[in-house]
Image (cartoon, rainbow, N blue to C red; front, side):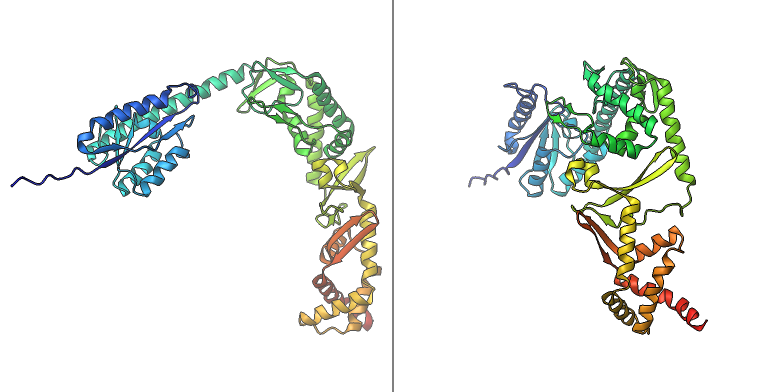
Length: 449
């Protein structure tokens, strides 16, 4: 009787290849093809053991080994978890990962699904303790090599930056990049000089921002290395502070907070730079020492434009006098043509809202709403008391400090919307009830007197 032949179990082998850069991938036979050919030959040599190459290609071209966020690697891991792979074959272990922690995660996935890992140039088996030791040693050297390469790149970058060369990113307004050097763009350079000069004359970032927006000036437009156009937006406060802090305009190159002489032409002289920063320092000191009760913005966070954009309080200073305004955020972001109402004088709009508020407090509808709200809140206040309490606010208003007026406006007004035909306000009914309860003791005291 002939012995029964035991069939050889098929071992499904997935070949994974990777190349960090995209250089040469368009060639007919590239690095990924070379890796795959070596791995396929190794699998063919193990045919007697039942090894079988899977037809699916797991190729990551132009992807770093320092991350696990790779399309082909993710497909491979998904197929492993779906039990479609028995062995992962690579040309070298650093093709799979250059980071020790990342590789440990991959090995955990392999072990959980009983998948073996093989490198055709560094033969070992990850299912044995000796194989794991060899793997960790080899991977540690791979990670060391990657870190050394990174240090060399950083050192080269720092040396180039210290020489004043441009190392990438958005070019500063006033310059174009030619052969990694900043070259003056005369049209933009005039705008930079104007920005510094007008700030010295105005003394206010907000006033300068509105002047530049009204004149149609915009931030830097530039073209990326791959030819994509990037249009500059309106020059806002953040952009202005960025210009004032950018020492490139002094002809310097800055690396990690240290300035070096640049190879480009300066746009601003030291005297102008010093005057601008003296004004910025003075404005900061004045803002920090200003009392909270000084001219508070009554409608901050409450006033909205017809487009639904919030109106932000700003101020300018001219001849020692402060002028306050509310400006639409839509106008700030998208230009003054984007909003039918761009700015309004703060005093006028605040006076209009307060006048409307004081008038509403005397209407029967508001008095009834307030009385019902006090009843719902458990307060036993007669309707006549509510009427007297709200009426008491009108003559009392002018006696209040500005901070107290601001607190009452926030208590009573939910939202104020300005339109071309005036301003509409929505009230806090709960705030009205609170106000009536607050004024009730004062009313009772006056009645007894």
